[in-house]
Length: 186
Figure: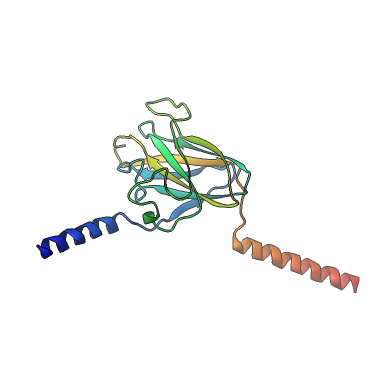
């Protein structure tokens, strides 16, 4: 009896461990610039493991609009918006849901589009200054033939955050200008 229980417990643990996967962000969104991507046709609207992840920065009080454009008519694009960044899909559990930490909105079919589905769009006011996550999913699409659906994702009203290397170069440039000014004054 104990061995049957141990086998069942091990199987349950392995199946729960199998749903977790590291999250790799495809791109940092830039204000008003479309980022291209694709998603596996097998993904479902609430599957964190098969989602494609994007990030952006917003200041508290910014009005942000995120919208998706599917590039294939058979794709039913959807996305989930969250406050914060995530390292692993187990931070969501087996599926995305409105009770997940940082949940803001679920976008699906808000923009009319020729074909069987609409495109997703959500507008929200950033509650905090920091990074946000968009998880792009597939809602009710069938197979695309090649197993992938192409899309574009755009965010308006976000702040563009300079990379740390850019900040270092800007700081060095200002330091150099201060040195030149000091020499001229001296």
